[in-house]
Image (cartoon, rainbow, N blue to C red; front, top):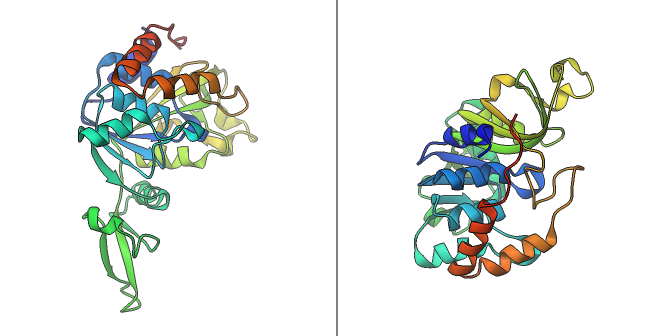
Length: 271
């Protein structure tokens, strides 16, 4: 196995609250494969704010105990089949959320405050299942209810980014969700398309899109590390591969066959 990816996977302890990015932002499928190969277990998977094939694979491989998300979808290929099967079987705990709620709770974690108010879930049935969300009056306007969400501070944030330098600074570009993840998480693990010379913080054009090394614990070089998903301008999604996964993963046997093939494929290059 790629040693850098193996080291990265070893930094995600069993039972960790693991926050991952959505498909369009920067999913590390290379690290996902390393986690499966390591045999990660009992993860609390936080999808920010929705999950896709990454979440479905981790669930199907038995790595996940709890899922917190607003959706797990393969886009035009439908709901994640192993996610749906796990829900039916009761083998995972589901913590329903909404996109604004996940973003707001992470922002509270980023700011180091214990909770954050949100109005958008008032009147929904989510409040019946999310007992950790509290309704109270706005202290500045009695009779004006708000929902208080506890801050989310992931144990580990995991994502894929375009580049890092040898100082550990990571270029995320305009994907500000990744900056929030890096700020909120106790540890941040990143796979990248390239490792560049020099210091990204010295480049006035790229520095505004850099997550400083202060917030980054481990970087692994993994060219093509988001495939079969698209990634920025580097490559598009592989719809044939995604369709094949969706079809095979409808059954336990089909998923196991797909997983064995995927794990047997060559790993991405090490840094």
